[in-house]
Image 1 (tube, rainbow, N blue to C red):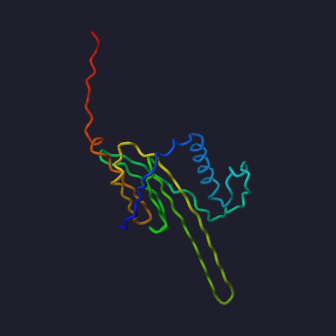
Image 2: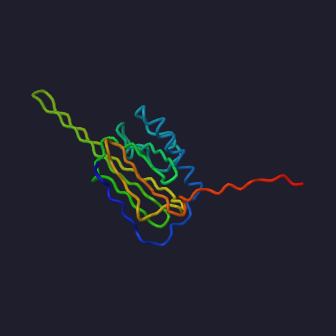
Image 3: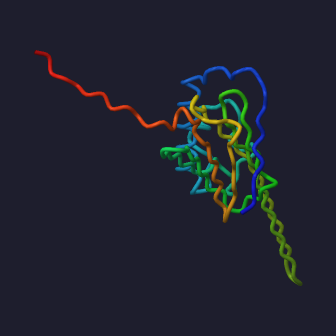
Length: 172
């Protein structure tokens, strides 16, 4: 399984994410997924200042589907990235943020005696995740296998300690 390098950057902590921008980004992705399957620009473009035709096509590439899971020892982020190569992925940690970037290129060319067809599609995405304090940032790994990227975020030894059960007593 090819390893995707994880770059840990020493910087000042990232500012807290803007809740409204985060909500709007999720709504934009929802509209893009709905409209993107039909080859139309998304409905959100009706309210944007930029023209809808800029860079949008039937082959547009949107943010990947992401799953986040947790067990006793790790958090795992899995992303579906069919057709993406390791060289087109960037996983980095800066402050308390994990960032996943990718770029997809699709080129198709057909030639024969009576016709010539050339198609090109390009797209990129970027997703960022706030890391919990319990993540051991020096041990984060990323593996790409069969179009699925798995980022493993080990918990620190302190976070892996079993929880202490506290008995609740009725007042007399």
